[in-house]
Amino acid sequence: VQLQASGGGLVQAGGSLRLSCAASRMITSVFNGHIMGWYRQAPGKQRELVASITSGRYTDYADSVKGRFTISRDNAKKKVYLQMNNLEPEDTAVYYCNSDPPGQWGQGTQVTVSS
Image (cartoon, rainbow, N blue to C red; front, side, top):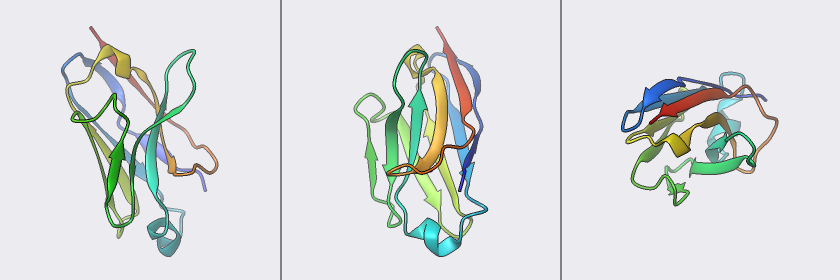
């Protein structure tokens, strides 16, 4: 099932964005059984996992985003969110939502941080 990310945009360094992901086509019990994650891919770089969350809301973050990004999920609505604060130009990338480990990739959302 492809997951669609939204909420990206252009923001100045130090700004904030909130990304959303809806797994509306996924059966609720399947969604609740998966660790969900936010990934990103910057130009010329490999896709990387930046944050993940279990159904029980245990979270994990890449060192580069710890203290700035917060992942959350709403199991009833089958949604996953990524609150990004104090954004840096190095955060510029296409952001994707997927399970961890990932399944089929859906459409990402572009985040561009200007200095």
